[in-house]
Length: 295
Image (cartoon, helix red, strand yellow):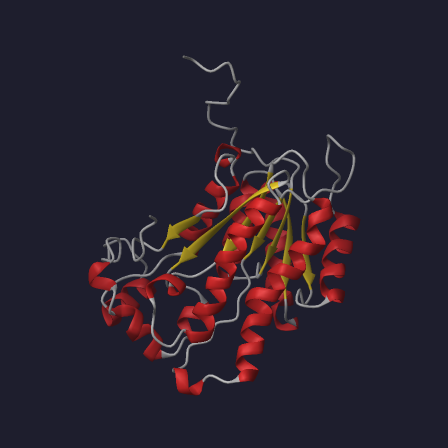
């Protein structure tokens, strides 16, 4: 028997985020910056959240690029989202500079992406309390703290999108990721909890990238790269292709396979944020070339 429900079956317009507001942490560079470009290209206004003064030029340049290329409002906000003062600054700057929602006439956060992370790769015996507290403050408490601050401004019609950026390391048991992998496992658990708690406001999903061509990967401990490379023969999308970049080919020849481009990870986030993904929540989506396959 056919349903009488009205369900959109056509593809959304290219700028289906027109007028929306997205807050993205770790957005001055790498995966976060690629996510900002992806969402801005679809019409979303973007709050570029980053932590350090040294990233000021990158964040300013990205904001100018998005504003010029996509005719959106893009603002850089340097803030420590692990602190009360930091998240208050993010909300205040967004409320002051972002356009209000056209339907409600009020400030609204439509998309929240937790991309910032602190990478830690050391053997078990080298882990210590100080490192534990730093990794978990940024990778676990930071998303909790900022989501708490954003919650009053989420939509009330389930149209919101929250995307947590985890890591394949929490699933496949990569060596040296006791702290980092553990913190990302916590983020995945939080995703499922928030999917229930925030169901009337937003979908909440998570992706788990593998190694990606970012500064984090370039500067990672060589032993961690070698440990990850052990998986490459089993990763379906890891073989190099003739059109891969020179840098990608150089690393790929050293470690037996290529890693992701930031734009590839951003594309998966963009898919999750689409209106067409409204019936998906609490999910962990594979974003690692098949190193871990969603079950």
